Structures are given as structure tokens and as C-alpha cells.
Length: 431
Image 1 (cartoon, rainbow, N blue to C red):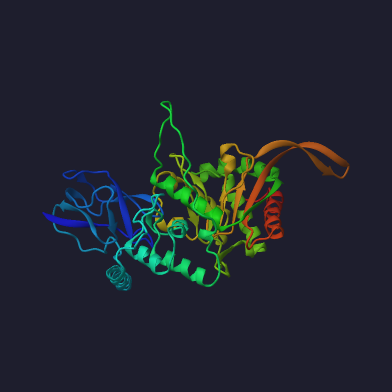
Image 2 (image 1 turned 180 degrees about the vertical axis):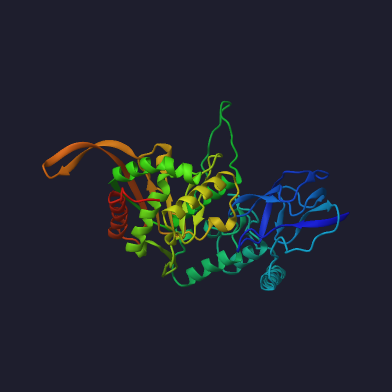
């Protein structure tokens, strides 16, 4: 018999810890290698972690709710025979990361020793935000009020304000700018009355994250939305013609999403200043198109996986990637790295029967496109013999953009160009 430790795997380049949500097996249970063992949450995604070895679970070392660093053990597994030497199942933090963490800890300890524990700044705010001793002492030294600290949007787990967040806030304030995260005071709590007929539902972890990020996006970017109605009759007829053959040949569906995504990518090539990000007073023009796609989960929550280098894929490649990511998103099998790095996002509100929407930008992107439902409408058709009335397939495209860096002309021209590509779709193309 051999007993091995299963450690917290690294679930992304910048993810250094995870919260144990639930154990799918108990101590004493038998488990197969690669069988799902526990559910772990990071600040990017909730995911199932498979067992690294097969055998009997000897001891569970991390309880539900515990935050475990990458490389630390979560349980022990008793297995038959000897342990085979193989590659590590997780990347432990590098020496540089450990050294940086030690330096932060030393700074925190020195600050705590000098200034106590953050003075009048509470450990937990009225809104439920947690502030570490280091953050509280930096705030005290820099005369940052509780209200200002409350308005700083944290990038840490569960929205916690990190050392990096508060130092960025201080730098912006010193330079005379107004940090976007504190452009307005934190909203006051509103008194709500309850009756015996009401049901109180606690937000789950993902819903809290979505709420925080949507508020942050609205506080950061002045949103403007432009609308265009596109005639997509040729595209619809082409898909209807090839979808059955495609399903039989490829074993998967051909949806409208990758077709429209292809047109969006073409329009971004024409207007590359849509594919940018804002870093203080600098504009970062991205070298590739990493396309985000909003996916509704069975729980009712929303998640946005990202297709990296989507501009290098043809329609077949986009179709396979869209289907794969949508399927794994609904099965809670996405990796944290697949939820970051997006440069532009599309959201198919038409799948819910909506004709248009005003989507909220995914920070730090500057644009997002909502795809409305495709509807048959009577329309004027220009013909050599004169104008005619005919039935056409129409859809609204709603482009929300960050008016700090995208003016109405660019935002409007971009969505018009997407519609142009859809209306000029080649109905004789093959896939």
C-alpha cells in the first residue's frame, strides 16, 4: 500500500488559490483516477477537480469553505502498489511568487507593528467587504476614508481589495485623476420590508461576482448603445440548406453564433480601434481578437468563456470552438484561463426571444455586441422593375461601447459594418 497526497492544482496562470465548495466523495470512499473528487471555486470559475490517483480516500485535509493555496494538500489517497513517478499534477508557486508573498507579509507585519491594526477602518465593512490588516494600514497612512475604501473595486477573491488595488488607487489620486472605481460614493442601503408571503433567497457566489462586476463596469465606462437592423435572409437560407448535412458529417450543430462571430471579426479588422483596452491615460491596441461569448447557465447565472486568437480561425474552427465552450460552460468544466483575456464580446439575447438589448461591457474591453432574435418581416425590396414588398429575415444588432475612447461615429460605423458583412453573406459558400 502507498499513501499519496493530492494537492490543489494550478487552475490558471494568475490563480494561486481556490476555495473548496463541496466534496463529491467522503473519507473511506473508493475513487478512480480522473474521477471528479471535489468542487473548487476561484475568482474566475467554479470547477470540478478530478482525482490524481485511484484508490481509497484516506483523509480529507481541507474542509468545505477552506481557501487552499496552489500546491497544498487537500486529501490523502491510499492506493495499491507503488506510486509511479510522473509529472507533478500541479504547478506550485515559483520562487519569485513565494519571495514576493514573503515580502508582502513582511511589509504587513512591520506595518501592523508600527500602526496597530488599521485604526478606525473596520475589518469588515457594512457592505460585507473584508479588508486585510495590510490594506487597512495603507489606507490609514494615506488618509483614505472608509467611504473611499468602500468604493474601491477589489480584484481579489470575493472582490477583496488587494495591496495592488489600493496602491493603484493612491497613484491615481496623487496624479490628480479620479479613480473610476470611486467616481461615485457607495450606494446607501435601502430599507426593505418583508411580509410572511415573501421568500428570501441568498445570492450564490457567482451571482455576487456578477453583480459586483456589472456595477464596476457601469462605474468605469460611460455606456452608449447604437442599433442597426440587418437583413440576414441569405445567411438564414444558407444555414437552413447546410445544417443537416453538417450535423450528419460533424456530429454537431451549426448555429448562427459562429457565423455572426465571423462577421464581427471581419469588422474588427476594418475598425481595429474597437479591439482596444484602457490603462489609465493609455490606450492598448490589442494584437489579436480574443472573442468572448456570453453563455447562460442552467442556474440562471451568466459566464463568458473566451476564444483566443479567434481572428485566425475559419468558420469551421469557430463553430467547433463555440460548441465546445458552450457545452463545457453549461457542464461547469471550463478552466479559469478560458474566462480571461477577452478583447471583444458578443451576447446572443435572441436565444431568449429578445429582439434587442443594451449589454454591459466586460471590463477592460470597450465594446460588446448583443444579437437580437431573427424575425420574418415585410420589407421593401429594390428590383430593376421597381420596389417590391417581400418577406425577409431581419435582426437587430445592439453595440454598447465605452464612450471614453469610442465615439459615436466609430461605434456606429462598426456595428453598421457588421451588418454589411451579414447582408453580403455568400449563399454559395461551402463549409
